[in-house]
Amino acid sequence: MLLALSILPVVILIVLMTLPVKGSRWVRLPLPTHIALPAVAVLAYGLQLFCFRPGSTAATQAASSVSLWTNRFVHAGAIDGVLAALTPLAIVFGAVLLFKTMEKSGAMAVLTARLRTLSPDPVAQLVLVGWAFSFLIEGLSGFGTPAALAAPILVGLGFPAVRVAAMCLIMNSVPVSFGAVGTPVWFGLGELGLTSEQMHAVGFKAAAINAAAATVIPLLALRVMAPWSEIRPRLSFLLLVIAATVGPYVAAAQWSVEFPSIIGGVTGLLASVLAARHRIGLPRAVVASGNETELPASPCSTTAPRISLFRAASPLLAVVGILATTRIADLGIKGLLTSEADAAGAALGPIGEAWISPALVVGLKNILGTGTSWKMPLLYVPFILPFVVVSLTAIPILRMTRAAVAAAWKETFKQLTRPAIALVGALVLVKMMMLGGAISPAMLMGHAMADAAGSAWPLFAPLLGALGSFFSGSNTVSNLTFAPVQAAAAGSLSLNLTTILALQTVGGAMGNMVCIHNIVAVAAVLGGLGLKDRGPRPMPSAADERPPMATDGVAPILRLTIGPMLVYAAIASAAAGILGIVE
Image (tube, rainbow, N blue to C red):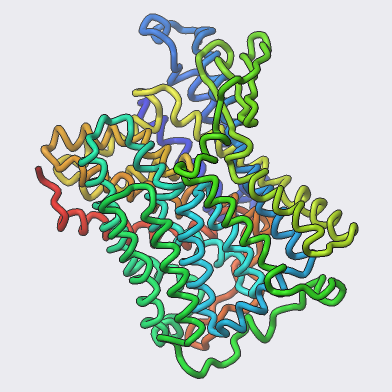
């Protein structure tokens, strides 16, 4: 019974957001995400109150009324979800503000013009920005920052927004296992008591599996944007960049779980720039594509002062520099930005105790007396640093007028209204699905998958990792939640522990393709949930004419990403068999 109730919110959410129902006055599906997500979150909240009842004892479970203590756990989880939504919302706000600032100043027009000069080839542009640049940013930051930075650049180049969002989510999967300086591995698996040798074995196997998937996944991502007939002549370029990225990535994973994605991103970005500049693996003659000839002029390009390339690129260079210096622990800045030392607190009665440290780490302890806590390092989360600070610093550097600055801030706030509601609904739903420890809906589904699969578990292990990312939007959280289930399954079935844990973290990486709040976030950066797939396809072909995609929610993006995720899972299971599944 509880298992069926665990699955119910997921099924209803998928139905509400993807099932088309027309002609009804009262029921019109799919629902927009800012309605569907809060509605399903309320359903999950009610199920926790009246069915799962976390925190209750066996006696209170048998009682007919819901205990006050159980109420507190559920209410505290909902409050924690609302507060947790502040993190992705802050990141999205900062990213939108940065690109609105660059747009209104004319800097974005200068950068996109330079990218076209570097290579007029649309595939080269997509690979350089969507794959190599995103790979590096994922290694440095995580938090959904890569898509937030790469997608607006590609839309500025004239590529259609919905397909750009899907392509960026698909491409930003391979580096996620080692995103944010390896956090999903060293922290996400840190509670399992692995030895140093086991941790490095997990990291290397995860890198090898991701590298195997990288031979196919970027192709599937590009197929979202262009017909195969146009990708085929550029295969040599694509394979060169992939090899330059994942080769060093796998090599680095043999000695470190912190730096594989950073090293792979640097080498891949250099290789893609050089190959694009010298047209290595690219057709020598490129017919002017739609995104070059039909791109509308920037609204600021005729009025903004002329900006040099260096000044136009300085905001993005500053973002990358700040992310690098604040993420690498050995530099010492990360510890300062996340320090909770000498925090000052203030009692808020039954709500809990609010606190703030000199490093601007804010939090709320013991919410409703349940021990539930929340915190947010304001200077470490990609919000104030780098996005807001860089946006403010860019005003004099880019010589923005007061009217342009006001327009950038006004449009940023306006753009985030509906995404904010959707993100709150998504994070409350996440907390409700993970509330209750061993009897939480997420854990019940995980154990049910393991029990049903039996000896075939290696085929399903990546999907459990993906399930965790689907709920939480985080490979780290997926590992924290489901790695114990994976370890238990490995032990009971005499499977190789490090291989199964590698499949878990690979699954968490590929699950970022379909994570709802990641989709909401990138959609918000690209203009809100009412995205229209306007504009030309990058390389139109008579053999590949498809109508523009309209979306009022996440369904069209999800339809484009679910297939590549399943392919990724199949490749992961096959690669794990080669690495060794049985002890």
